[in-house]
Image 1 (cartoon, helix red, strand yellow):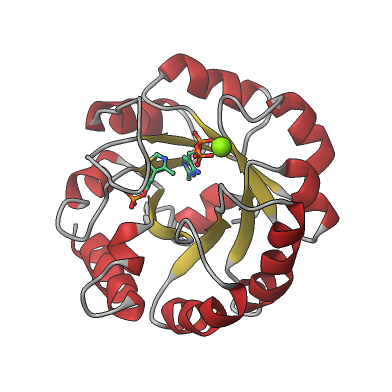
Image 2 (cartoon, protein in one colour):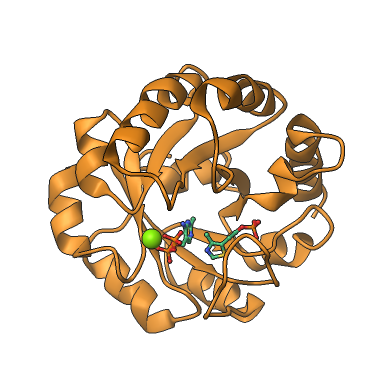
Length: 222
Ligand SMILES: Cc1ncc(COP(=O)(O)OP(=O)(O)O)c(N)n1
Ligand SMILES: Cc1ncsc1CCOP(=O)(O)O
Ligand SMILES: [Mg+2]
């Protein structure tokens, strides 16, 4: 997901086209996971992969990045690092995703430069999203839209927020939280540029590749 993510999220004719944004499982063994990841990314259209390992120290993150970044980038899937703009720059990631307690967004923008992506969590808040836009975020992320077992969430977002944002602003918006092939259609119709998912792909009963196919099909049919 380059800085021109909006262009990627839209077809050549200007028609909105929502895309899948995949986030890794909360824990993984990089070498074992690499094959699963490759198969999942080969199964359909995935715009971005976020490495999200909340319990990993810097060494473990660097090892995971070294193994998984080439898997994504070889397939032209943007490789984003959760929480850490500094490490994203040092390790050749395509960008970073920061929450509201993950340090200064303005400092991260500076560190990442114009060519790497900065994504910012905005929960269910118009105000946070406009602030993120002002500091130069490349996308804003709203959620959680549905109950999720991946993370204990404190904030919820309503579908109307996506409608409002996409009518008011060009900056791409990501929807996250409990999104599945079965429940995603209203988010796509409301104007989400990307759907970020963990469980819908990695916990799919027929495996991650089937999870990607199901999400892509649901987005296309919405
Ligand atoms: C695409 C996307 N949206 C939101 C989040 C959540 O970020 P944050 O609020 O910082 O929480 P953690 O993911 O760090 O637990 C995200 N990671 N990705
Ligand atoms: C990281 C994060 N931030 C808000 S909800 C969430 C978890 C999303 O995972 P899932 O797609 O399994 O609900
Ligand atoms: Mg965070």
